[in-house]
Amino acid sequence: MAHTIETSNALHGVMAEFDSGQELVDAARKTMAQGFTKVEAYSPVPIEELNDIIHKTRTVLPKLVLAGGLTGMASGFGLQYWASVIEYPMNIGGRPEASWPTFIIPSYELTILFAALTAAIGMIVLNGLPQPYHPVFNVDRFSMASSDKFFLVIESTDSKIGEASAFLQSTGAKGVYAVAE
Amino acid sequence: MALQETPVILPGHDFETVTETIAEVPLSKRFPLGWIGLMLIALGLAGMLQMALGWVLIKGIGIWGNNIPVGWAFDIINFVWWIGIGHAGTLISAILLLFKQQWRMSISRFAEAMTIFAVACAAIFPVFHTGRPWLAAYWLFPYPNVMGLWPQFKSPLIWDVFAVSTYATVSIVFWYIGMIPDMATLRDRATSRIKASIYGMLSLGWRGSARHWHRYEVATLILAGLSTPLVLSVHTVVSFDFAVSLIPGWHATIFPPYFVAGAIYAGFAMVLTLAIPVRRFYGMESLITMRHIDNMAKITLVTGLIVGYGYVMEAFFAWYSASPHEQFMMYNRMFGPYGWSYWTLIAINVVMVQLLWFKQVRHNTLALFVMSLLIGVGMWLERFVIIVTSLNRDFIPSSWGMYYPTIWDFMTFFGTIGLFLTLFLLFLRFVPMISMFEVKTLLPQGKVKADH
Image (cartoon, rainbow over all chains, first blue to last red; front, top):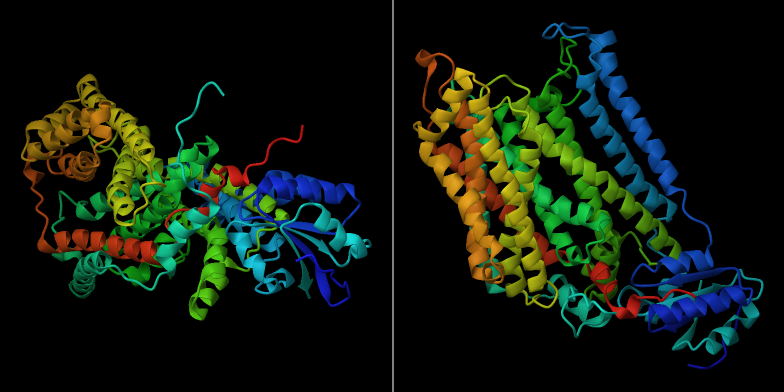
């Protein structure tokens, strides 16, 4: 395992394998402290700390969802108002044409519908999915990333990529692999 | 730690064994005999549904037993019954997630599947009650007819369309999003090329990076937060179909909470009905433990007590209203021609459910299984009582009449049970029935201690 890895342009990066979430988090902390910048971690379970350590920013998804929900509410209410007041006004049970209390439920449901679809589609799109091919899949061991192994990758766009392989060996990784592009 | 919490999953599991136990079922080449046998029964019933629905399309809805004065019967009873059953799935996947109830993780996947299949069965009834389902799209959805007339937005029936279609959509989306990481696991473990590519496509190329997981967790939390008010609104709106009308027995302010509690009660009973045989058949007892069964039985008891309170209040309102029509409705319900159905539902939903106070009962899976089936019957009877006994004897005795379901009514109802079973069996065979990545978060291997 401990052979040296040539880093060239044909490489996506260097990958290290760990046995537990704790080891991965410790290694990620060390890697960031070492000054590496193009780093990504892969784990079979969500580990909240990793995003804070590596990326340091939070997703804009909640804001998109708020916008989606408000759009849903406006479209729900607007649809009913337009159909009942402007397009085809009709007297039903003597109630006012713009009888807003009866419009609440469809507006409410469309708020939730639009917000939920924004959350789901937003998550997928922001994650760049669907993406059938990614260089990390070229590493055979990476098939364990969805089962019980944890991985850390320093990408070849990192200015310190030359030191990456030796550094990752020093973090106590179970294995270090080159990731072909 | 002074207080040791009871483990949610039995000791002896690590990431690998969790993956193996759960992923083995969809990835194996084996179709167990029991599965095939049940599938044949389910398909038989589903075929009966096709016949019943085919004939209703050819002949018209006159083949059903409902007619004035009982204009609503099996079509609405079964709709409400199925929708209600679905509610437990959303409660487990959304509300218990917000409350950080870790025990929900082992049962959320198949409870959500149950929700979606139940909603699919429910939708059949109102759609076919329109008689011409191919036209229902513009009777139900906001789209004007050839005269330029729109659906009536002041009617609870159109609210129902919005509520139920939103509920179905959001449930499917939530379920699918929850499955993406597990689909990646199946992709990585599949031995055949076909399976690897199908699960690969379904996983969308998920690779579990820190950035992916962060957005994923945010999205899941938001979806749970949105599903919670949604699920409460759905049965509320279903109850408005009745409560907004002026029929004695329907026009009651207690309907929304009473319906929601009844829905969760029936739904948890259904989760028990499904979970008890499934955990045994697939050897999942270490993941769906007695703690899950016990907790579900407790929720069934609590919601059952709320439902019992609803029955008491219905009777109280009838008396306290001092309206002769309300009082007669209640008298007719208890001692009229359908009195047997009222007392049967009281016997199940008020009396029998008290057995769940006892731990011996909650830990006896056979007793629980039988009780959960009976609760399904009891909740079906509740809807029967509310709908039929409120309609069959109204204000003028000359317009009274009896309702008798026809063979087609029964074929449609039991047919939807077949459809539900078919879908559920397909789900058990081809989809990981327990969320692998969520269960893994309970294990020490994935846990990270705080920095300082």
